[in-house]
Image 1 (cartoon, rainbow, N blue to C red):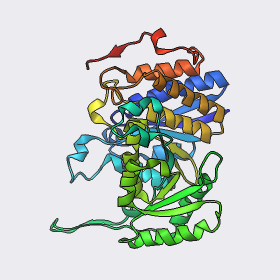
Image 2 (cartoon, rainbow, N blue to C red):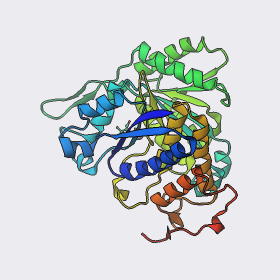
Image 3 (tube, rainbow, N blue to C red):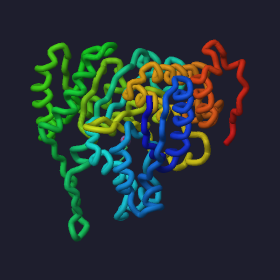
Length: 373
Ligand code: IPM
Ligand code: MN
């Protein structure tokens, strides 16, 4: 297959993790005879530095004309520490989500037995955890009217949802709950005891659920969900929620996998789909070759699947599993015996290329490893 992929490396660790994904994608295209053409575009702090604009029109144009977008990370501390900054990197990503109508952000959460011992949670709570968060991505408080009074004493962020916005993401979540391998359960996470928008979510989801009689629906307040994700994560199959709650609970859920650096995501809408790890730009690690590239590489695997290459996606996932089972992990997972970002990228690339048979164990491989950085 021939595919045009827009690559937005973005800020902080974005470039170095995205480069590992590109190595892996190149191995996939060699092995399976595909042509991937990459077009590099700017967004975020990087784009502000180079053009003054967090999302140049050229980037939007290229994204609209591509088959998929692979994105790294966004954000820079110089803006985080300056609340009065007029232009912010994150505006780029929010505008791109809006311009491409990427209304559903899909974040699968799973755990790996080989990482259980590294988790702060009890092992028994981590077994068989496998759920998907559907986060609404183009509405709610993120996109409502924002105001600061003239005297600077009062601020407003409006939260608006329409029934149509809720319905479209709800349909995707229900359809996913019915897919083979899923457990046909959907949990709506909201705050319907307090918020009017949440009551509209509940009512709308109840109505939509009538078209999916095979799916068991339950409703959970977000504060309770935050606790249940840690206490009994196995109960969840598909979680559906609004923009801000989804942002917060997905970072929380990443702790189950072992690290925020592990979780991939797909943002889907009416046109081109965007793939990105859920982690941020992690500026403290930028350029040190220590960031976890798996969130990005697993996002690339999701991309392959969405582009109609499930076999290829599975080989990438198998390669990721092989590294984890053999304790080839980055510093976030093992602060003592860790491997570099680029080393993990190379191992996964070699595995995809068939240079490492699955039977090879860690003892047979000697690699650049660090215990001090
Ligand atoms: C995410 C990020 C973004 C969000 C930021 C960078 C705007 O945290 O993708 O989860 O809040 O949506
Ligand atoms: Mn987030």
